Image (cartoon, rainbow, N blue to C red; front, side):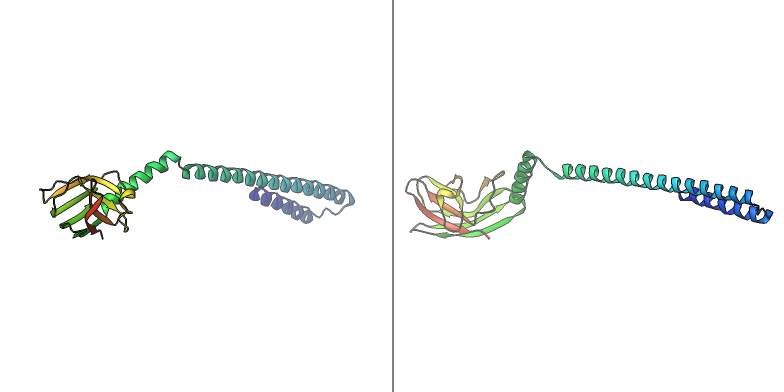
Length: 196
């Protein structure tokens, strides 16, 4: 549009120079010049208004497009509740697989417990493990207070195996800091290992 305006103005200037060069200074030509000037000015004003309207329309269209793009982006960024729950489960299972915590068992309540507990790759492993004989012994993962009720009951243990492995896949173990050997029947802790 600017180019059209420039050509139009150039044409006006050229016609003035031609008229001036030809020496047409009569009243008739002067009034014709005034009419031409007036007509050219009106056309120029119309062209400028048209250009402004086009620019305004283009700006409005680009604003609408930008709003539409922003809406689409915000829709793309939103996840459904199911997607977020799935991501949360994936993160929990990944954290089980990536973290490694180990600790040595300490005897408690007059019962002998020794060996090493390791949480890694979604598993709890007891190595060089031994415990006093007792009925109904289980391994739990608990917090620092050894709160069995709110702990994670992993599995019943074998009394005669020094190497034992238990599956923890799909369980969030990040909040637990102890492995505890607990007698369900007597409700007594036989030993615990601080997991660090």
